[in-house]
Figure 1 (cartoon, helix red, strand yellow):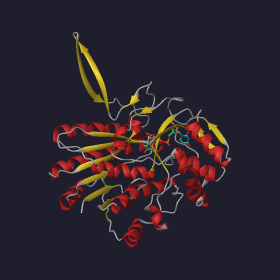
Figure 2 (cartoon, rainbow, N blue to C red):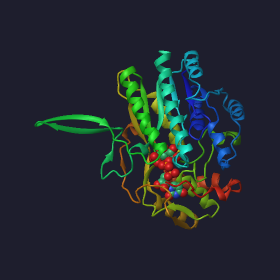
Figure 3 (cartoon, rainbow, N blue to C red):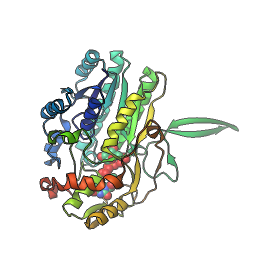
Length: 385
Ligand code: USQ
């Protein structure tokens, strides 16, 4: 059986991906130290959906699917020896790396949160890479990166998949080349993902590690075919001002008739992907690894591009909720254009889940159903930069 470690397998993307891979026939081992659940305690907020403790989730998954997923508690980035021993003992074919602090507003709350995000994310990535080298195993690393490393003001350029074609002219001689697309992060969180790219590039060049970096857009949705199989398997849904991402926040706000919180004019264009497609993309990435001497493989993991105010208007039309245009708490362009190339995952067979088809299912089956669990005081975005 093909064996995969999912680091951060109890989180929003990690949990449904673990189930998806388990159903697809992989032996899955989740490595998670519950840091995402601990952040909920710090922020005094809970997932809108009632997520169960990991042990219960895994027991129910075994009952409904017949598949066993193991869990090991290791703090990635802090417990290097335990991680190394795990690799040597289990010899996985691939590692999926979700084990990072993933919220931009959280990373900008205070100097403490900036430091925590940098220390945690960079130590995690470097420890995983160093452990693969020290283990001497040929493990393919699949990392969840972000579209945010590119910046969003692309001045008409279609954002390529990681590498930018350049021409350098020197003394009348023109040389063609490709460089890592210049990063332009908009928060400390996004900056750590830009730094991750350099770590990947170095370990790939120096140690010939096989690495795939997935530049993912904003995820929306909650459930996947696997998490729907039992109430105990439900995925988390963040709606608060730090961890809630824009579209899921709007869906929940519509469900409780809370005017949609558009930042500024809502002229920001962003890339989106449904959680179900995240899981499929991870599987496709595992099944299309780079060869030994290949450079880092970078895939743009997104399926649709929308402007924030257009999303708000669409949801307002469908549900009758109002729209509140608020002062933007973030330092970002008020209006931007965004064009993105995402050919590689489509060529591997990804069939995108579209917003138009799934939007109202999400409002009805998740946001409305659990709306009584929402604490409205947690909706405003209080992190400013
Ligand atoms: N926004 C609003 N109203 C809200 C919340 C957000 O107008 O109530 C706006 C923000 O100002 C921003 C856009 O919506 O312009 C997206 O914000 P977001 O919180 O949905 O997304 P972001 O902070 O960029 O981060 C999220 C995930 C992160 C992932 C990233 C992908 O938290 O882990 O890497 O999306 S991307 O945005 O493509 O970089």
